[in-house]
Image 1 (cartoon, rainbow over the protein chains, first blue to last red):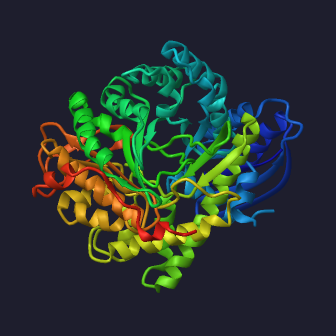
Image 2 (image 1 turned 180 degrees about the horizontal axis):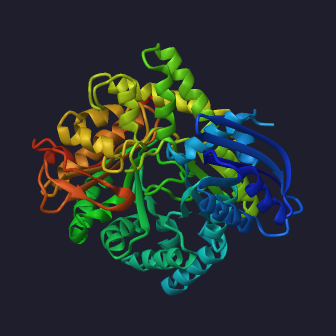
Image 3 (image 1 turned 45 degrees about the horizontal axis):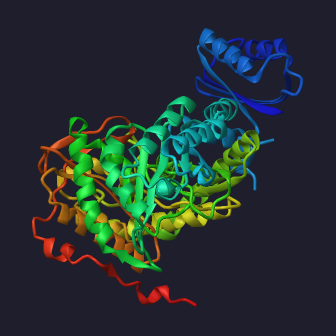
Length: 89
Length: 452
């Protein structure tokens, strides 16, 4: 299963490191990253392969949300299919 | 890979514009539960629903978690109880409603529909018992939804049933006077009812439906309104185009959820219902879409044209996005459930007459409208007859879900709570309809029913 991780909030040092640490700890493989910073507004999108994750999806989701709360950013993870359904015919 | 802007657009739709899956509704056939003994029939019904729907709530929750798209309701629609209960020969079907309520409670679903009768051409003895049981059945339960189909384009309008239902609605309101007559919010009177509607209160699992299936109702008035901001001042061609594109995206999401739910539950996918269903949440409003199109408020001259365009463009956009479109598929106008619509009604600019006109070109009819508690039964019947006539003549589904609020008069404000929202008590004409309704009989099917 592939999933999209989105990180939105105010830019600061160490965002990518923090998010990828959580993903790595759960054995999620990052396939692609793109990010933009508009003034202080930070938005990052990661495509991840979750086929070998070591914890259930909901657990990974909770860990990411908690990390987001800790560093003051909104972190979401959603299955990739929903975006493909909406934007690709 | 998907572009960042596409991904963020989806997230914005969900987070800021209230995009959600309004309902995942499981349809369950109860024909095999018909028994002569009422107690046995009720036990069978309860255990069948509990067996079939046991994973429904959890599955919807899992999908919501994984896809990040809120699923607001999980519901069950069953075979019209008048057909299942007939063999009992009982004089009241309230025990069936209680069995449905118990099944709803133990499976954790939010509503269960199908306390229903199809009487468009005439009522069987069982249909009569069901309709008589509706007031008590609804006032003694909280999740059971009732519906009665009183007309079809093929059969005409059963005016005997229309007459009875005026009294039924009044009685249901009186028995639930402590909650402003809210039992009536779970009673829909239809013309041309559909067999696969996932939306409540009018959902039932029709005779032509499979043993079990999953139907999904999508929503998203907020998303459409947001999209319309991009075409301010532009021609209607552009308005229609952007609504179509938006509807396509929303429906694709609905189709995905429907297929996933079907796969996980191990039951066939039925249909996606392309309705725009408002909620009391800020911005989740059909009235605001009409305003965004350039009218001062919903109810102004032009509102019917605006809603016609909206309804048509949603269908055109959505139809290619789903393999099977069904249900009601249109923009809903439930007054108390759409906070902006309620405000328009309170201002006096949006009247019952205008709502009736708008129901000619959109889904579904006079919906969630509070009327004075002393409205005569004959007047309520006449309101139903008007809506049924619109449905029958235009080959479309129409419905009436009105609440004569005990003790309230036109202009008062009434709160039903939760998703049922709040709104003004709307004025009805005081002119006498009783001699018209007293006639009874059947209004013949129109010429357009002769298609063979």
